[in-house]
Image (cartoon, rainbow, N blue to C red; front, side, top):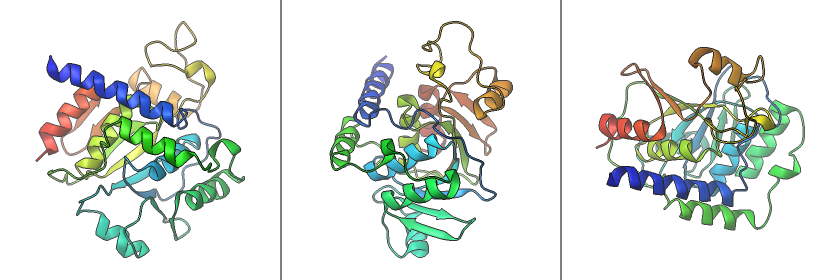
Length: 256
């Protein structure tokens, strides 16, 4: 009972985090083709600058291999320093163009130019007040996803279907970051205004039908619904919906 209550409190805190970020990272503005080799993002979930990059990945429907680098982490921070020369996050590594890029503004400009063929839309341009609100947003979630916790590393990376603005997905990403578990982030942002709202009560009433040919349609064809977070763990052949169930699984399977 107490665990369930605490989880609901965490969900509300995550809603506040998305609100402070103006709910960026929910809608897809231009779906682009996935590159031949996956993008690699060295990332800290609670970092407001990393959040800006993840918002753009959702906006472009781009997937990425996430290398969690929480404070006190030992698994991927040395790799980031070896690739870029310092432990600073976010750090994007694009194996398709051999680009290694620090600074959220530079990464965002690169992603829009390289993969969308356009300049950064005004909605995603940096504003002086954004770091303040984003920092407050991280505080609203009690800075979860900031510091490393004791964990057991899986042999293979996990797969998470998510989108940045999803409060439920954020809880899972926070845990994956704290446990330093690498995963492929499959972005499943909302492709149309009719998809706004939670999976079981979207703004448009009636039967849900995703846009034909999109990533959501492919997910729907496979699972019979479109709901995030959704986790697949190839190490144990486990597939899970629902943030509470996923968190319990991660704590039991990989928590220290």
